[in-house]
Image (cartoon, rainbow, N blue to C red; front, side, top):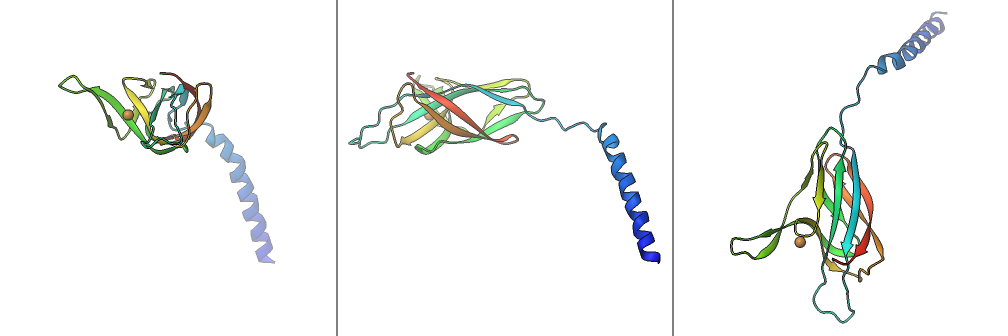
Length: 159
Ligand SMILES: [Cu+2]
């Protein structure tokens, strides 16, 4: 019978190829990637009264360290208790007035870090649903261009 014999030969070949594969795989370098670590994540305390008519805003700050070999970018933040979240930077205009504007991304350079801190880059939280009280901690999701989603816990602090 020809067919079963052929099958046996093909099977034997497959096993041979499979056994060779791990040896071949050892030499392959994994492509360089970012290696992110978030530290010192905190959110500015804010009181939200039930009878308040104007939306209450706050901001989140954090340091993102990149121990990897590839630059990454923070492209967005999700925070469930705010109606809208934007990446912002503070600046002083030509008349000396402090202001802020949205930025599309925050770069986290390879082997470096990005600092989001009062007076500089920050995560703007518009329209809080509930107060942020000192001692509370909140969860937020950071979205990176290369590394994807990273969830962090941020402590609520006074500015
Ligand atoms: Cu802002």
